[in-house]
Amino acid sequence: MSFIESLTLTLALTYSVSLLYWSGKKWGAAASGVLVSTAVISSLYWPLIAALAIAVVVIGFVNKFQPQVAQGDMRSNNLRDGVQHLLALSMLLVGIQFAVNSALLKAGITPWLMRPDVGDAFLPIAGGIELKAIISLGIWDQTHPAAAVMLTVVLLTGLLCKRAFCGWACPLGIAGEYLYKLRKRFIKAEYLPPAWLDWPLRMVKYLLLLALLYIIVGMPAQTIPNYLSGNYHKIADLKMALFFITPGLVTLLCFGFILSLSAWRRQGFCRYICPYGALLGLVSFLSPFKIRRSTQHCLIESKGMDCDKCSRACPANISVHTQKDIRSDECQACMRCVSACPKKEALHFSTRNGIKLSARGLTIGLMVLLFLIPLIAYLSGFWVSQTPTETRMYLIQHLNSIGH
Ligand code: SF4
Ligand code: SF4
Image (cartoon, rainbow, N blue to C red):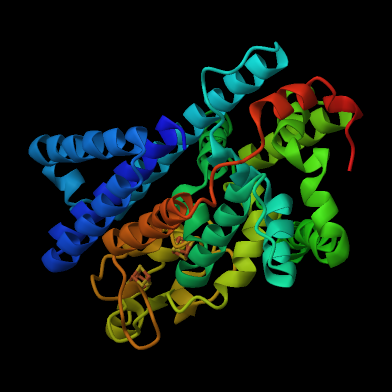
């Protein structure tokens, strides 16, 4: 686990403990703090231990100078923006580290900067095949174990808190948001497709998901061990990087299309193209937590007033004010609707039997899922790739000739 991974992980978990403490669950926070510290110290891995010490000091300083941030006592939009930007910054640093590591390998120099295993999160097909290997054959891949871990983690977030991963954590979502805002500075008008066109366009991401699932599900179980021990799997991450660094004409056209789509429509990439979003959208139907509107408190039913502030705040264009429970696969649990609602009790992210999750609660849940499971995986020896550096250095010289 690289230092930036360690620091992100310990900062996120320490922040969760801080939020838990300030939400009044002092015993829960104490127990979680002891659990995380014990886990980190027992790893005997100095970057992780040093990162924990730094994280504790940083959260302590934040609590002294910006107590509302450390205590999560702020508007949900600010909390979400902060979480999203910090995770995006971490992913950017991870990307730079990965690029430096790969460039050194390519130059035949033993890398002084280690490969960040969390980059395997961008290998969903490898992750899916690895999960299939675990379930059907009991084989735990040691080449890109983080791919299976991160796919599991992301699926769990969908199962528990809808598409909160998209709304709170995905770096592509935030990049799309900036592109959209940039476009709006120059062209103010909105060009939304009519409903009859929007629906089939939304289905495109499900078709892409189907294609990915076909690769995973269609791979015969008996061929999986060969695939996992093959050279292609060993350098799947480098192949993917090469695809982005040296794009052909078709790839460039695809990139241009995706960028235009994100600039044209808010969350255009998430809504129409992203297969990860499609997967989470499907899984999110099972989530017990949903945005729910209380007709008892909503100004429409309780006071007979006209109000649609929640719907106007929704980046996914969901008609929140006309529904009781938001089941839409496009809901990213971003809580913008809750924030925009003038009536305190009218909207919440809750279960059917009334268990509510505030923005602070959602942050804690998300951080724990996103970072505690990788920590457990790391301690169990199922996180770091076991492919020797020499093997990667040899294979990267023959990248173009290595196929499936
Ligand atoms: S319904 Fe609310 S939580 Fe869901 S995407 Fe719209 S604004 Fe965000
Ligand atoms: S913003 Fe609040 S009060 Fe207004 S319609 Fe939506 S839920 Fe009701």
